[in-house]
Amino acid sequence: MNTLATAIIQTSYGVKGEVKVRPFNDDCSYLRNLKEGVIRLKDGREVSCHIEGFRKAGGQAYMKFQGIDSPEEAKKLSGATLQVPRSSAAPLKEGEYYVSDLIGCTLYHEDMIMAKVVKTFDGAQSLMLVVEDGKGKQFMVPNMKPYIGSVDVKNKTIDLLTPWLLS
Image (tube, rainbow, N blue to C red; front, side):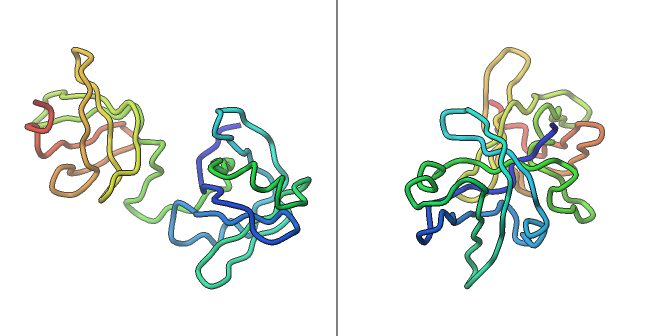
């Protein structure tokens, strides 16, 4: 199954096995319609899950998974990532893309290949792109307008506005 990470499971909530989740996007209403997903545990193992319920209260999102019926069982999921089928992920607006689609994109500056995105992580102010040049050296590039221009995930290209970041 081609999946996308959609939320982090934070901690247990209540006595019936519900968990607090932090969705990766502002509009998480699509989570209400999910029935199945994959939980990627902190140790890397993946477990299929059936989603019994989703609700939002006071800005906090909560989910209930089938078979997780106590706070002790729910607490074991803390720090895990909820993966969903790409077809069930948050709908994209014009100009938006899924972070996972940046992996493998080539960074160009003035038609010159500079590096390739090998992974991403959340930085203090923005998503950080970990890129590797042709010599195997890695650099971090903030995914922000002063540094990154156009992003074309269909053609796997990113316009690097500040090549000095790779020196």
